[in-house]
Length: 153
Image 1 (cartoon, one colour):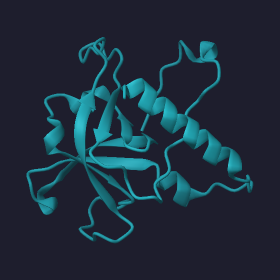
Image 2 (cartoon, one colour):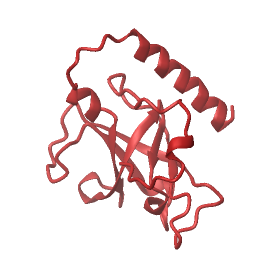
Image 3 (cartoon, rainbow, N blue to C red):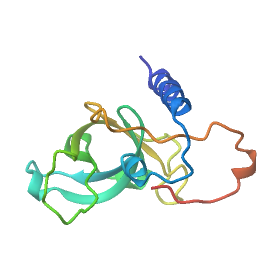
């Protein structure tokens, strides 16, 4: 299955789940935080893992992050965490999910010096827990946003 097809299937599933939810008028920070991921570089032992970047779960086993977060990094040395909101804590609660990265995908057009196409996908070896929900991605027209610079976490 191609990456594009895999992401399309996940986005369709996400949209169906989103349409079933009822808006409450309140921000659900717990749901928002379930989409945020931390990326760590591992030296083989959990306690020695070093935080260095953030990302967002966009499909069952794909995390969107910045391209510069993948420079000189190997997939087998990366660990993505979900649900750990205090990076200084070594408390590994049951709510905290950790996954190894299977593959790093960066656009061929990425230029680290010019910061062009500074984006990357991290394919996880295994999908996070069932409580993890991918972020909702913009599916509308992009013409009004083409000249706007922004920061993505």
